[in-house]
Amino acid sequence: MGCSSGSDAPDPDPGPGQIDPPGIAALVFPEQNSECTEGTNPTDTESDVLFNWNDAPHANAYQLVVKNLSAQTTAQYNTADSQINVTLLRGTPYAWYVVSKNSGTQTTPSATWKFYNAGVGASSYAPFPAELVAPQMGVSLNASTPNVLLQWSGSDVDNDIVGYDVLFGTGNPPTNNQATNLSDSELLVPVTSGVTYYWQVITKDGQGSHSNSSIFEFKVN
Image (spheres, rainbow, N blue to C red):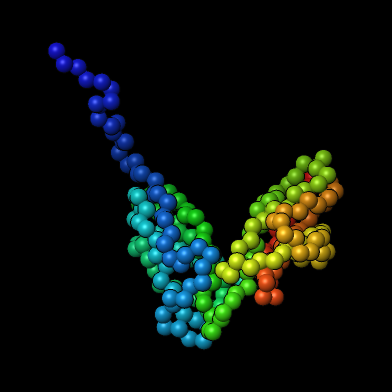
């Protein structure tokens, strides 16, 4: 007499109307922390860049999100394909990611990559604006907090970052230069309860160029 184990049983019926969530799109081009030199139809100020990524499981549509890191502006592009052509400013840093969508309402974002759209005759580029990591934007901290560790990450196409300046204070934008030429990407600062603080990081490279991060705020209760 034969018998069967539970592992031989068919998968349970997912039920009517159930839709698998979309997977994560694997980004391909423009590459992370790269200089994009493959733009087409270039002018002195713009070029067309073909963004592409690998198909994500259970996805039937995508939204490409492109952020101009200099102007801090964001544009969105919808497509059913795993690539799309976008006109971008030259000599400008960008960040991008892809949101996978299914036939329902579920969405899944990809990783975020950064790149420089190559400029005319440029041999070096300013560093990417630092990404502020902690404290997160708009967070409220415990009133008993005496010090806060500011943390960020920096990157550069030319790999020649020489230091960071940190602006920190109660005004927006912050003007107090809390530290200069830091080699580390973190700084411990004293805080007082009942105060809202603002901070920004300036990244400097070996060519004398610099870039400013966005401004984050946090409150000590």
